[in-house]
Image 1: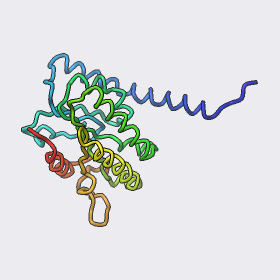
Image 2: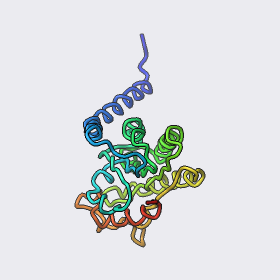
Image 3: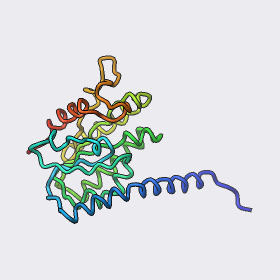
Length: 218
């Protein structure tokens, strides 16, 4: 009689859930691909890639006016999804610069700061191998009132990634939007967020554009 191995069960259950999550984004990814087939984006742009904080940035064109920017954010995504769709949503654009926002949903889903860091390194190495002329910037995981219980994990993940970026300055950079979004007591500023206390309003994006522009070249 075969014995039940809970570790094997958990492994395959995790694979199933990951595949299910990635399939949930297929519609968004295909919509981008259809849009690109109708009007192909120019190569060499600045690519916004990541989760809903990019997807819901309604005024990104105005906020980043003067820069050649392409937004390919897809809501609810994690670093594993950004890696999974890399060949379809990053490589074809041959971007000069990638601004990556991920990790927020990863931590909310129960992943550790260390796992977020490992996944970021996988993404970074894909950029280095497949897009050697591209600069990758990690936009820090933002603090939010909704996820204030994750503040310490966010700090740790950000610090791990920041240190790695500093050690690999030739192709990596770290954009700290975390610190300016905190009050003096180290809590998120409510006025930067929509009613859901998670997603940014224009005041929040005003901070993002200010910090991001420090690293962009026209």
